[in-house]
Length: 351
Image 1: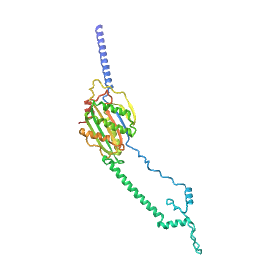
Image 2: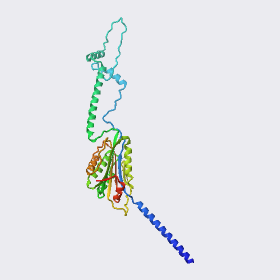
Image 3: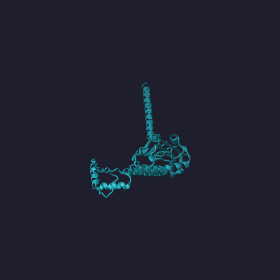
């Protein structure tokens, strides 16, 4: 009887130990699976939709008027042989003789006689000349202004842009490449580590070099997704951020980030041994510009993608407001499989 109870107790303990071991092993495997990231990503961005007004270095500040003592001394020491200054109004006292019994003798002041002679020789009062000068200056100003804005509008007509308007354009161009295009992945990482996205020059370099890196490997293009929409300037930042958040939510983690010139790196993820080998690299270019029309239409084939990339690479610095570069996977050891491409990037079409 005791032997039977002992065997039952032993079998119970053995069963409990086996259950605990299986549970611990399952927990360890679950933790290991969590340590592997689905897809790492890199992100570089900079710029702002609120651009400060440029300083007008050519315009001079209005000079302060000279002190009253200077004006008084100038009027008192002016030579009578020189014509009076038209820019300064000189008030000369006039003495009126109210005594009708005494004959009127004109003053013998040489300055007054000179002024009278000058006024009679000109034939017009000084305020008439002032009105003529003001009207002539106004006419010249409007003529120069019309010529300047006409030439400026003509130089920008091919870009479909109107700087200073109330419309911005938000553009997204997303390209999937075969995983063998590792040089693109390496180039984007290099740019994000070196370029200062806090400066307009650095942001332009990042945008142009990213587009050029894609242009150089057309043989690796497989899928594309694009959109270019003009929106009111008051809603441009909201639309831009919405597209950015949608794309960033597709990543498990961002292992390389360069925002506003500040670079941060995280430990690169290690792909799970059970995961399929890497098949694709997805690069997203997100641009905010001062164009009042879309940069391009729908992209359906390789030729359209080539023109869209060239349009982004040729954006002038005066039109660029915000740019963000996203690519996944960023780590060489990570992978993006065919199933993940279909799941996370369902809007992309094959070209």
